[in-house]
Length: 341
Image 1 (spheres, rainbow, N blue to C red):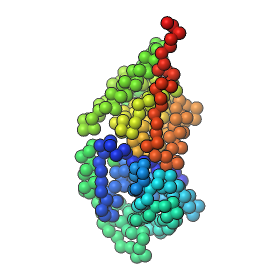
Image 2 (cartoon, one colour):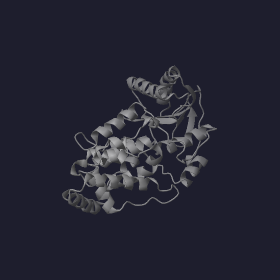
Image 3 (cartoon, helix red, strand yellow):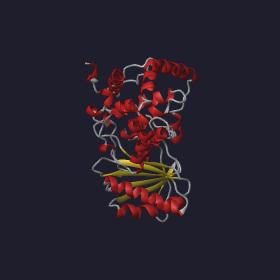
Image 4 (tube, helix red, strand yellow):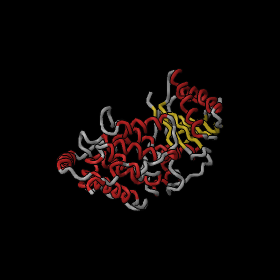
């Protein structure tokens, strides 16, 4: 059983769309918007009332009894850790009995965690059924024309058709470009540039990328910059620099930048930027993208410890509001070497 583990929603002051839920159709329309993709055969939990901000979770729909209990415990722990008081469950499945079994197990667990389950429905892409009625009747719905969806599109947000499409967004499509980048990175490494100057450049460059207004088209990353970033983030100390000024507000625009860098990276150079992308996506509230980035970092590769730390944060439903960027004064690569004076 694989899990898309709880991740907090975006920060309240990041300028993202806001939605007021008034009906079951509103709840259903909200699901792909908060996840970033249209889920299938899944249990989706929407939460409200947490002091750290709302967070939402998706897990694969469990079939075996032990898996059902595992999911119930996982979601309850996430609710308790974040202090959510109100929960809505949306089960995406063709099988009504499986959906009922899950809600019957999850509901009491949420109650013991201090949350009130106010809505539970099953959806199949066209219709929804209540999971709190003995003889539910089908209700048609269409998220494509829902006002939430329209508002999301107008805000420039992207919803993928499924989770695989999120993973595919990191798959390289330009092999010739990758060969050029591989050569460029080798050339940069052979130059043995001053790591302090390179760190200062990386920090300034990321701050500039983060300050792009949301209502402007995303700027493609210049090939020379991609090569320079790839060369740098293979090193632990430069990945730390990449995280120095990373806040929840800056994480949202930087997700696109790091996604592009990962997608263009040659073989052997994807792990470092993928680890930074995982952290950035978690801070932006994009748990699906964070997990896809984590999956690209293998044991022994650069950034594996950072990727594992993000995985633990996702698994334990740690709110991104708890993130404290590294202290620049303790970043060794930025310190001036006085021995030459």
